[in-house]
Structures are given as structure tokens and as C-alpha cells.
Length: 163
Image (cartoon, rainbow, N blue to C red):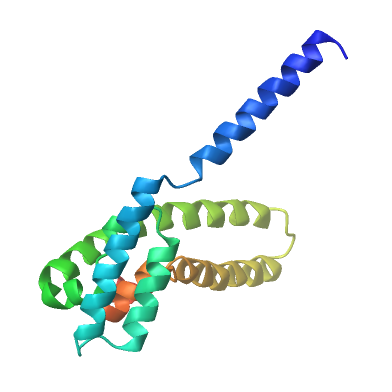
């Protein structure tokens, strides 16, 4: 083996080690998460307002979130409902802006393909199909665990913003 190949292999190995270290939790952060989860569990178990569905949605939202501190537990949301609603409206508004840009870009690309169709009937049928798919695609963005959890807790859906 030549020297260049040996150095490439070592570099590749070091890159892989760094990548694997990045995804492993440190002992301190693991203890912090465990402590937070234990406190949340105690609060949820003692509060009669919190249902099984709320707990399940909360756990799913926590599991899908990269930054778990942004997601408040059901007891906190119930105690601070107005504040939670305002924050959720703000989140949905920002998120909707991102979704609209993405879905509109998809639609524009699909409409460009329509130019190749020969008859107006084919074009109209194609555009109707694109419109149906646009609505489906738009709605699918709003079924994330966090949005489902907060919709359940605050009774706010993204349709509230549209209408």
C-alpha cells in the first residue's frame, strides 16, 4: 500500500469517528434529559386534566424534536393556555410561509410540464389533477408530531389560519 492510500484511510477513519461522536449524547446531557423526563412524568401523573392521548402525543413530539426544550409538557400548556396558543399561532404562521414556498415551487415545476400537452382538454385535466395534489401535499406538511400535539392541546388547527 502506498503512503497516500494509508493517509486517506486514516483520514476517513477519523472523519467517521467524529461523525459518530457527534450523535452520541454526553453523560451530562443524558442526566439532564432523564431529570427533565422524570419531573414531567410526575407532573403528568398527578394532574387529572392530562389524558393518555395528551401524554402519548407529548412523547411522540419529544421524540421527533431535535431541541426538546421547545416542547412544553401538557401540564405547562394547560396552565399557560393563552401563552401557548400565541406561540403555536406564531409557529404555524412561520411554518406556513415555509410550506407555501416549497409547495408553490413544486406546483410551478409541475405546471411547466403542462406546456408539452397538445390539447386544451388534456391541459385542463392535468391542471385539475395538479390542484388536487397541491392540496394533499400542503396538508401533509401539517401532520408532524409537534403540530399534532399542540393542536390537541390548544384546539388550533392549520385550517384556522386559512379560513
